[in-house]
Image (cartoon, rainbow, N blue to C red; front, side, top):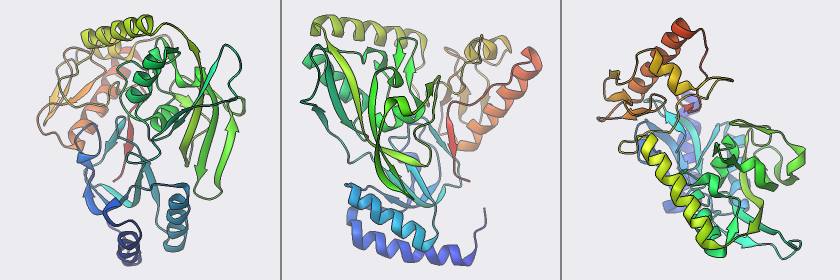
Amino acid sequence: MSTKPSFHKSVEKAALLFKEKFGAHALLNEPLKTHVAYGVGGPADILVFPQTETDLLWVAERSKELRLPITVIGRGTNLLVRDEGIRGIVLSLEKAFKFIEVLPESPAGKTWVRVGGGTGKADLLNWAIEKGLTGLEFSSGVPGTIGGGIFMNAGTKYGCYGDILRELRLFDFKKGAETFSRDQFHFGYREQTAVKDSLVVWASFELHTKPAELIRTEVNRIIQERAEKQPLDYPSCGSTFKNPEGFSAGRLIEKSGLKGLTIGGAQISEKHANFILNKNNAKAQDILDLIQVVKERVKEQSGVTLECEVIILGG
């Protein structure tokens, strides 16, 4: 994809500023395949790991000043980055905004927990188990950060983050940071109206007490269930498509005879048809080609239009 000379000059100027400001926390022309679960994708012009809200304000100001777009990623567990990479500034919370704290104003019988957007889902779940706090079992085996979990309203058949959310602190690159209550937004199946062009600084959840051994037993059961049904031996982004209302995307794909179909280094899983795997050093385009084949074949065979759950970035 061609870019204007003025854009390149802005990137060159930004590169100097970001290295001066962030040092080792700013990477230039950095391959994103090493920062996303799929293990594919071209470079980011500038990949930066901010540590504070003040850092976020600084990045927002430079973005506006230099007219460079900002793309936010976490651990990239639900991202497919195109082979051309991402132009401008890519911002990751993977190395910061990691904290878990119990709020002292928690009412009797409930525990309110504030969690940084860069905190790993598994880290929060393990902390909750140790503290004997229930409500997060649905996230058993689900990878990524809390910020990404809010953005996707990630979950399983056992629940989702929107079910237990109390408050959100969001950073908007035009307006700055602001705190919101749960009832100001809609949360549905793999969707929400809270996080658009912003990122999650922290979220607070409502949990309840329960014996730790009972929580751990349920978590282990869910993880075992996932392992039996899902292909976890190769890089993927989990479910590639959302389940259409009244249908299972995996069953529609299987019914269309696409299990095991391979393009380049990518393959539709033979274990669960809604997973596209990076089986053998795949390119992003291999995965994109399989996505297109699946959409066309399922539409032709079943009359159902599949919508991607994986987020496609770059190009």
